[in-house]
Image 1 (cartoon, rainbow, N blue to C red):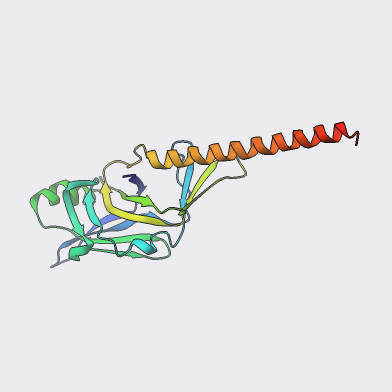
Image 2 (cartoon, rainbow, N blue to C red; image 1 turned 90 degrees about the vertical axis):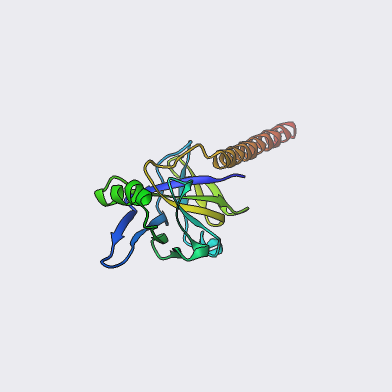
Length: 197
């Protein structure tokens, strides 16, 4: 299964509401913001990319670790929504010593400030192109599966084999197309030379 992870800094916070449980709220992804360079390309997620997966059974995990479940959409302990900024989540945090010590306390201190999401791109849900500065851009317009959103200690930019493979496929197709155009031009020039035109 090709699962990719992406993270964003400064997008989460723990909210302790008087007389209520603690909530972990933030954005798993923001729209129309070009990522930092990763594996030879930059990425941008467009509005509407998550529309088809908001009904998925998505987990709220700490550091993408299935041993630390913070919430889940199927049990209504996590709510997902999309607004003009991005993919928003609100997790009703478990009131356990482990979660308080490992997640909530460090978030309240400002030690955990990043949020991440695990996903799979839909077939045809990405476009690759080169911008005016020669930077390769991956534009994601549709996610096929949203696995989890997670407060994270470190950015989750792990080797995303599927995105690198997809970029390499695009580069190969681009190079073949360019070589075909060069060969066709050379063939036309030879025909014109033979005809003395």
